[in-house]
Length: 189
Image (cartoon, rainbow, N blue to C red):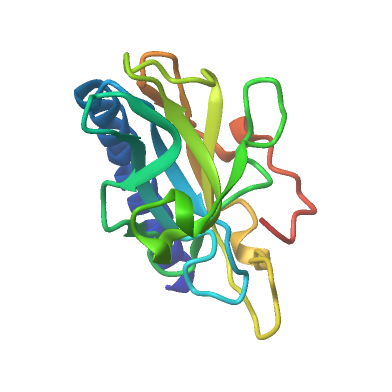
């Protein structure tokens, strides 16, 4: 039963995440500035770690000019359900490099509780995804007492799902965990 629930959490998280990518792209087009879908990697001891997804856009001043390094949080955020987490191991740019990360200081974001470090995916003001072919992967796993990183259990080892994001913001789901190149020996995300 636990395996069924974690699989459902993973598929629900993927479905909502695809919708959040559409929301970030729409926001970039509407505001004519960069918008990001950001995954919280602030504090491994916090329950939001690898689970909270936030959408933000660049700040625009009263004259309509974009302030490059300042961000406005455009959503309350979404928390990935249950024992599912964003996978930094399997979420990659199209060249295989890790997804980009950035530290956002309290001075550079409108809601200081969102300051910190994030993995991010970015759309420009024309709605074009800045790293076409990047993957977004979520997996089922647990974080035991004292574990900084989630780890898979033997039964959950292949319970990963995800998608690729294309230049136009559309996504293509992985139909099989083998498409994500799951390492049989994985124990952390």
